[in-house]
Image 1 (cartoon, helix red, strand yellow):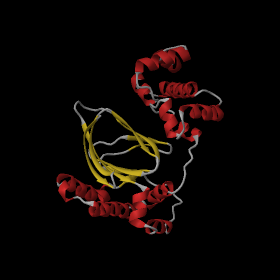
Image 2 (cartoon, one colour):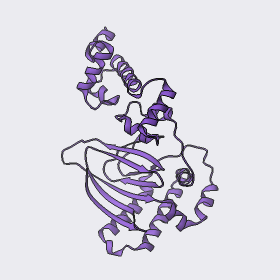
Image 3 (cartoon, helix red, strand yellow):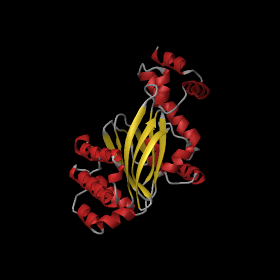
Image 4 (cartoon, one colour):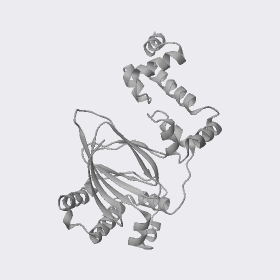
Length: 280
């Protein structure tokens, strides 16, 4: 749940925002025609997208490319608040600020290696401090300052060796995207995502997602994903001493009791019985 939100607008769109979030929290971030830079002050989420499944650390930032993303922060203590600073990167604004300068700058760099999505907190901390200052003194903000902050962010990302991330972002802004259903499923098969959320990560309607899933796996999404989760759970029960509830969460079930019921229905024994039988 978003507890508080402050924003700076540019061309009638939110360009920079500061938000306070109550946990637990799952946020569906859709950036069909824009990118997004997000910095987390104290705690950071698990990031799930068509190409990423990673835990971000506190006081670090992520650069989200165009597409659909899910950000999930689990609750650790009562009344917990998480603070984030968000900068939206719209292609129209980047084109206005840079004309041909940014693409030519990016093209000079070799981006054969996979880019890092996490931005160094040492490099970005002063930039975040400057945004904090303006949120404390909002009357100082105008369009000229907002343009400078966007340019500053782009230059900091490039200088912090994230030029390939910038390259990928700009490429996304200037081109269409395709997502492979199989790649998304393989990456997130143990995540707590529903079919609607899987479809969104694939940029497909639910009916189209089910149709493409059938082509890729020759099975229904619900049956295949459940089977994969139970297969992984059986492995963990056999080779680890992890509690059943922890295994349930680890393979993508949000309710250990439901996991136990499904496990017994599909496997024939409860998770505890299965563990006892395989470790004898």
